[in-house]
Image (cartoon, rainbow, N blue to C red):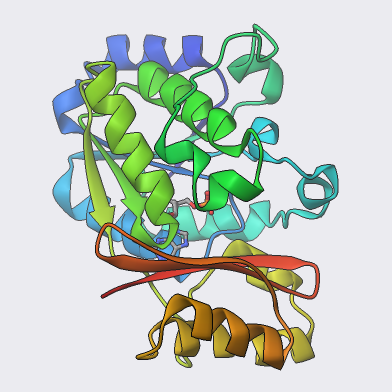
Length: 254
Ligand code: AMP
């Protein structure tokens, strides 16, 4: 049985009464609408830790577009079923007031990597991400936390705050899980129309093509994407595009 915990106080009391220590605890933060990408992180965590906590929290402070937040898919019943099937011990499921008693007057702000790539197009996005991750790591206190390489910039920034603020959690990167045709799995894929889903398939294909970033951008625009960026960073090629109104990100190792 996956036990649902809604408050930090409840979690701390449970850790005290059941003697749960950081060392035995693995954690996967998510925004729900769980798919096989999330499942791969969860499976790895379950296999490497005595106890696993998954959080589901659609973090409003990381959405720079209110419409994107409103439309973000919610599939709680299905998510909970997946957590039970994967033998997750605890679901941390807080609301906004619980995680933001300060109403976001305090934030974690990074001043370098968070300004480029996605950060250049989504103002304030990484302040929201880093702030919520800091809150989650400080309240759950896991020994290990698992993040997907699909969100490579996010992963690097989270490694960065752990180092900068001496957090006692090991950050573990997990490879990107893709659909059979190559599209990286994402909760936002649920929002694609059948035509947009077909178009989206060109994105991973072109991202790994043996061409320059400018050539890839040109080709993507030619087939119908709006392109935020295609850039190389840290031995990877990363990109963000729109298929219709749905923003997709992906990256490949060079
Ligand atoms: P999200 O619910 O989108 O915030 O994602 C929660 C975690 O799952 C993040 O660490 C993501 O990087 C990871 N994730 C999302 N999609 C994938 C995927 N296709 N493959 C691997 N990890 C993923």
